[in-house]
Image 1: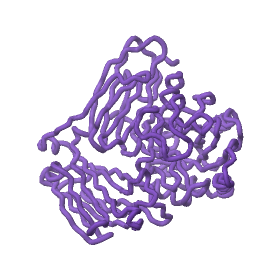
Image 2: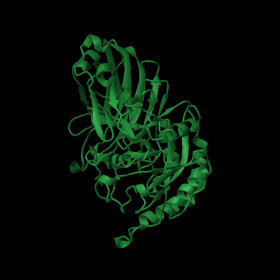
Image 3: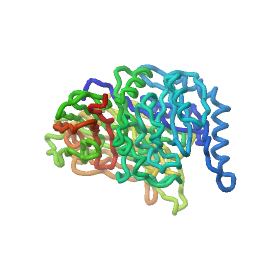
Image 4: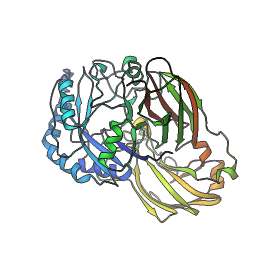
Length: 496
């Protein structure tokens, strides 16, 4: 990887200060649990909201009023939540428009005002005066149904667009993770990110959850990474303005991408050819890494499909622990299951761990917690349920990066929901998963996934690309075998 520090965050999410659920204090606490930064973007207004049958628009109107009434409290919580070098919190709001598309405003400073207008140009002028970002989201909904309107796009305040959120994938109209969970229709070709790039617009990529359950960084609902020089709000804003960002569906894939040495998001002058370079470290097996130029896949690369055991343990390995499952609605057992567990690797060390936390079920008091137990252990408190689970997945998980050998063993001790102990030799996990249950059917289960060698989860490469006459853009897409995706912001050739 290059010398940039990768920070992970969510700059578009909601709670009860708007028309979601949960307090702003809970959102901040959850964000601190597993993110490096977040921006709360409360629902503020919808000037061209259509009339709805049965006065259903009250859902939105009441949410806008709640944000306005509690804005002083929101401002103070965000201002108190910033810790440079440890965690960064940003203030923001979301502006709805059927015709112009929704925009998330994110401020670089604290104690800033809400702003009400029906004119996107005026909103942009406000953002310019504030030094704020103005980021369109759920791009690919149809025009007139809150999809992006490229006519009002301007680089001044919009260096990036949100290509992925809980709505789905707006990169293209044929890609995976289609739009289906809301009422605004399917993906419109002309409103995709691919269409905006084809039209000559210049923007980078971010993902964010748009979660309405007060759960920033909800796994699978969208995440972003920023390549920063320093861990501060100024450093994060500088990275976003420079388009040195990438979008993620959930897994924290580490991505380094450059063209002729210029990092993602750059604009460079180029001759007849350029060299694209990438380095990727995933949290699952890498399915494929694709270089995309002007809408066409011009290069594909694949990670190792089979790694001998003696080679696998010569480098750090990863293993995912997943817990949940349990009874489904048809059994009338939509309970919340609390989990408490401690794990250790012996002999060995836990180098890093990556939480993968689903947003549901909503609970104002419950939290997921992770605590290091020396170099070789981790304590986890969590909870799972099928109630309103995003895309029907109730499970929580964590990915461990280990320095260990084939003789090492993962010891796991549950104290909730039952007292259970188990041992999982890494040599066994190299061959296959270890599946366990907290009781007889239909009680919850938990699983150590099959061990992941570094050679199967990482990939570096280079390719030479021809540069056409006129402008050209090049970006990187990474897909893991478990379906999670990363999109690195384009590098723009001859746009000056």
